[in-house]
Image (cartoon, rainbow, N blue to C red; front, side):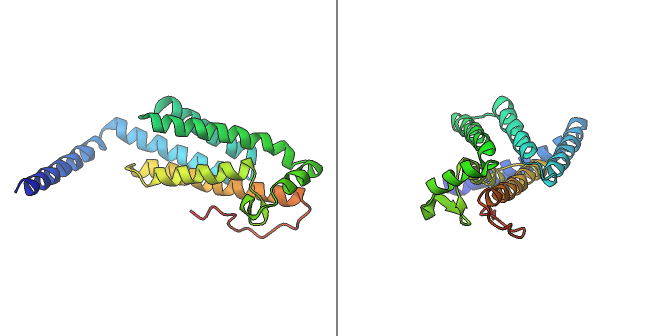
Length: 189
């Protein structure tokens, strides 16, 4: 009997929440926030289409920094964002190396084990960042976000896929390999 009462109460609270969210979403501030997030999503999508790896990574860094400064709600979230920023810095440190073929040949040799490779290319700090950050974003996408927030997360995931593809192209070039047609480089999510 008590369990039924709990579910009934829970259902009533869900309904109350829905009504309040709908009322909140009609306020001028909510309408303005929705518009601002739409513009943010559009800007992110343009950055992703730019083909500029440095710009894509700089934009993601700003998101991580902003999330850390504005939206941290738990110690686990803070640690995750700090880890992501550290991984991003490690990835940025590899960028000059992939642009020097002789140096990158040595990196390629140091990643000879099949578990250290993705698509036949070294899974170095940059590739690891793209993969782990895409997973972080995928987990965010599974949480209780509104449509505009999900749009931002989706654009960021697309940017990680674009960055991974651009970086894989730099790897192939540094290793003297033929370019591959546009395809997914391990970030299928």
